[in-house]
Structures are given as structure tokens and as C-alpha cells.
Image (tube, rainbow over all chains, first blue to last red; front, side, top):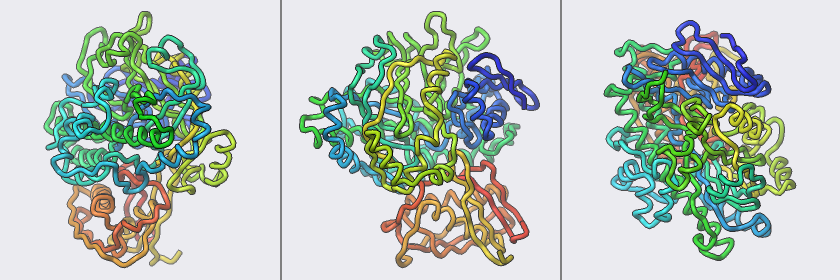
Length: 480
Length: 140
């Protein structure tokens, strides 16, 4: 595999062997060196083998080694030309994503009560086998899979207007609970409103830098303001749907004459019984993911109410946006000047549509889609805005951008570098309070295990993927 | 290490966790892998109070291995059983029958990341000087 530099922020992997399109990686010199340290670029080349892939196999600046697809991979297939869908291009955590809840509190008010706030947020369920804030019976589970955030709303959980500022209005169309196995439902039923583990978290952050005043204003953000960020996904439902459908496609693939360089890339045409079943099951899991972040929002609002006294409404705790970074969607894009129906896989990549696009909620349509980029604890998170389609800005990578900092160190290596207790004390000395269910695991998610998120979002801007709006710094981290 | 020994250890991977397992027979390799999968997440003490029976068919050995560990993970998360006494019988590399006994997850002590799923990524399984060996990556 060869790698050619195209610009300061873009690299080309020319199509060779079974690659149907080239690979294109958005990265600075520094970030490409990090991407080369594992086999992530080979995975970009492997994805280029998928039947029906158009354009390029893209990688965002936060690319790192995954399984099948790289994390930070974006690939679109033409569904009218036997284009495939690959569950590995979405990942096990279907609709894993980020939600930001605003407040009208200022950093200094929160600092005085941060210990109380962390304790209250610590009540939110997390970790291995964590049971959720809502336990669902069979009928309720089916409803979540179809209705997304509308289900908890119908039970009086959350605010009606919350749905308006969610991607897809908090409810993905074409979801079919019959395409979700009994096992997946059994895993998910007790878990709604739980964080899970790994890199999932709830953070209390303050806006510490506004880069674009106009867009920040449109997003309801200002310097010094406190917000809460929720990062998690569809829990056992998504994990099981992906497991089930990789198995199905692994077995069905050869009947469509498809072979792939990595078994985790198992795929079938979108327009096939197996493909349609996956799309309907994935949409159902995505509805669960959105409902999960919605129920967690209720837990976050209650924690703020118990800490600060006034109601969440008086605290101005409205939802800025909710967007997922692990999903496949049928979207229309131009390929060689012709509008085509594409299945766009974003695995660790965020949709970033520009002003005027129908996928942008009405409230933000004049400025563009909000992009929520979680950092790792102790480092900044970012709010970006989609730019594709704006004057002079061609659509790049099917209107996608980064999703986070991207790991660069294994969990084991990270824990060798520092003990969890020392890390907790160090972060506290920097004004960041951390609550974790397992102190020993804390160092796995240490800031030094991740790439520099500021460099990642800078490269996204230079490559025309998205623009920076505001930087957020954590005051309190509740780890999954 | 004696040729009759069995065991497991973690493998490093940027975002995920790998498991290296060895055992003198294929049946024991499958048994040891189930124990290794759960050990990634933590451990539990207490008497066995739950029992599950499993039978799986797959097109090949790799598929059988991934399906087996996926099933163990499902039973752990949904049926809340921590495998302690595991008996597996593998037939023709394409079928297995197993019984799993163990305590409930109620008192499970978390000591590691929550495993989301079992992947085909970099999967290796087959005969080796130790008898049989497998390498498998887990999404955490």
C-alpha cells in the first residue's frame, strides 16, 4: 500500500489490487504518523473493496485501528448499483453519539458545588451490566425501538421540545422491531437510561473559548457558560443486533458473489432481504440509542436540580443537539455530477451538513448542523458546525467530519503510565473532578492515551469538513 | 509451561482488548475462552446457582468460536450467569453442545472494561505446540 501527500491535510492511498476506489485520509503530518503506527490505513484500503463503493474510502483525522472498518472511516455505496451495507461500517455500538444540554449557570457558580454535583451525577447507572433508569417490559421495548425519544416523552420523561433539536427528531424512520432478535431485546430491556462502560461518560463542561460568535449565538452558547455532555449509545441492543447481523451476512455473502479481505467487513447489497433486515434492525437500535441519551438527560437534569435548587427549566437545561457518530444512512449525494441514493456508513464520524440542508434542525438551518466532538477527560471537547454545500465549499467526504480525539495508546499501555488514583489527583489539581466506578480503569481513558483533539478539529477545518464554533473544558467527569 | 496446561492472557490493541487462550484439547480451548472472556470484565465468588445449556452450529471453526463467545456474553449480560463450571463438546469444528454453570452476576466484582461484543478481527484458532490456541479481539 502506498501513501501520497496531496496537501497539508490530505493523503491519497491509490487504488490497487481489489480496491474499487482510492483511500483518502484527512490528516496533518503529525496525525498521519500516528495513523501509521497501527494498521488503520490498511483498513482504509480494505474498505475500498466493498461492492458498490463510490468516491473514496475516507478517513477522518481522528482515525485509529478498529475491526473491519477503521474508527473514523466513512464509506458510501450506491444502493441502485448493488451497493452493500456492512454492519462493521457502523460498529457494535449502533448510534453511539453525543448530546449537549445547556444551562444558564456560569463556571464559578458550579465550581463552588462541584463535589455535590459529581455525587448526584454518580447516581446515574454505569459499568458492566448496568441496569437503567427505566426498566421496560416487552411491549414498551418494542415501542422504544420504533418511537425513539417519543417513548420516554409519552411516559412524561423529558421535555417535548427536546426532540426538535435531535438528529432525525430523535426518531429514525423505517425501524422494525421484528428485525431485532429476541436476544437483543432481552439485553436491552433492562438497560434504558444507563451509560455502559469504556469511553462513555457524562461531563459537566464550561465554554472556555468561542471561535465563531455568530454560530455560537445561534447554538445558544456563550463564554463561561456551563453545559452537560452525554456520550453513550444503544447498549446491549446495538451490540447484539450487530453480532446477529454480522453472523447472518457472513453466511449469506457468498450467495451474492461477495468476498471481502476481512471477515468483519461482512456485507450484502442494501437491496436484499438480509440488507433490508439489517437497515430496519439498525434503525430500531438507533432509536434505542437516542431514547437512552434522552432518559440519561432526565438523570442529569435531576442531578442539577438536587444540587442547585431551582428546577431544570429555571436552570435553562434545554437540549442543544443530539447526534450519533456510528450509523449508516440512506442519503442523496452527487456522484460525478449526478444525484444518487447512497448508503453512507459513518463509523466514528459525524454527519456535518451545511446551512440549508434538510437534515439540519429548523432552528439551526441558517447556520449549519451542530457537530458535537467529545474529548477525553481532562482535555477539551468541541462544538463544530457543518459547512458542506456553503458557498465555495464543495461537499467533502459525504458531509462528514471527526467524532473525537481518537485513541493512540492501548488501554494496557495507558494504565502502565499512571495509576488511576494519581491521575484522579492530578486532574483534581487542574480543577477537574472525576467520579469513576473503577479507579483502576481510570487511566485507560487518560488524556495521554488520545490524540490532541484541538489538532484534529483544526485539520477538519483546514480540509473543509467542518468549522470550529466553541471549545468546552470539563469541570466534572462521571465515567462509564 | 507444561504441554497439558490451559490458560489465557490479554493482548494489547489500540482501542480494544485481545484474548490469547491455550488448552490441550479443542473442547478445553472453548471452555477456557469462556472463562477468559468473563475474566476481562471481573470476577465473582459464591456458589453456582444458575445453569444454561447451549448448542450452536456454524459453517466453520472460526464462526463456531465467535458464536460461542457471543453466546456466553449474551448469557452473562441478559441471563446474569457467570460461567464457572463450563463443559463444551465440539464436533467436526462446526457444532458444539455445552453446559454452563455458575453464580449469578448479582455480586460480580468489576475489574475491567465491559465487553460489548466478540469480533472476527485478527481471529486465529487452531492446533499449536500447546495443543490448541486462539487469539480473539473483543470490542470494549
